[in-house]
Amino acid sequence: MEQFVNTETLIIELLLIASLVAIVVRRLHIPYTVALVLVGLVLTTQSPVKLELTPELILAFFVPPLVFEAAFHLNVNELRRNLVTILVLAVPGVLLTTLIVGGILSFGIGLALPVAMVFGSLIAATDPVAVVALFRLLGVPKRLSVLVEGESLLNDGTALVLFNMMLAIVVTGQFNLVESLVEFVKVATGGIILGMLLGWVISRLISNIDDYLIEITLTTVLAYGSYLLAENFHFSGVLAVVAAGLVTGNIGPQGMSPTTRIVLYNFWEYITFLVNSMVFLLIGLEVDISALIRNWQAILWAIAAVLIARLIVIYGLSWVTSKLSEPISRRWRHIMFWGGLRGALSLALVLSLPLTFGPEREMLRTMAF
Image (cartoon, rainbow, N blue to C red):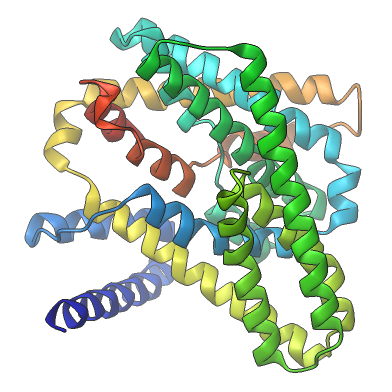
């Protein structure tokens, strides 16, 4: 009972801190997520908080609502119109990022190439939650928002498969390209099909109900249920949530009353704010400042490597995609370059590194944080 009360007290305290930070940053005009990490760091130095951030907690609890909400608001027609560009950024782009980041870190700080490639793969997926929130606030062109959101939603699956491949090389010393490619297709396709099926079923149910409490509950079950069910079948849980969110967001609202639609959108906006706040605050609480100081050179190399890789992917691959689909203007490329933030997925993957990984495990965790 005492442990439950302590946990509940900690959650309430964190929510209160997140609310106060949100109020302050609105007046100071600084990024909310950055402020949360800094506040978490300050809290850790004043009174160390013992928290166990496991990959299961991040991936199974925090990631599904963030991914679902983003997919739910994405227009499937806009996504289809820009699918070529998004797929190029989400698949070859992730592979290129992994190779560039891994190569630079291997050269710069002397990491073994397979180890450096593990870091490259776990940091390759973008997660621009803060950027998308800013887009909605400013009312940027719809296509730009779709490009940034679409890339971040679809590159998660590629990054996860690449990470598992690179991790297998380091831990076992074995690698089979054909098996890995077959596994990638199975995991991605299975997740997408399962998510679409579940999204369609829930959308049919919603279309026959006009009770916003039930509809909110059904979408919540869908967000978490599609992830858990896909993972149970060894498919991509993240891609299942993406597919479920896309189908429900484009079919479900058609049968809703205007009041229900507004309430549902507001609910998911609140959940996103809540989860995003907790993730970034917990990152600040988890970071070991002394480890950051010890590895400052590796951290600077990692930041530089990620920026260089992003530069090459955005400006290089967008030139390639301009030959295949509608070109991206130079101004938009600048925004996509700086908007390629990393987030919860990278955190979850680096936390999942096993103890058998080797002595570089702690360094990679510090670099990712």
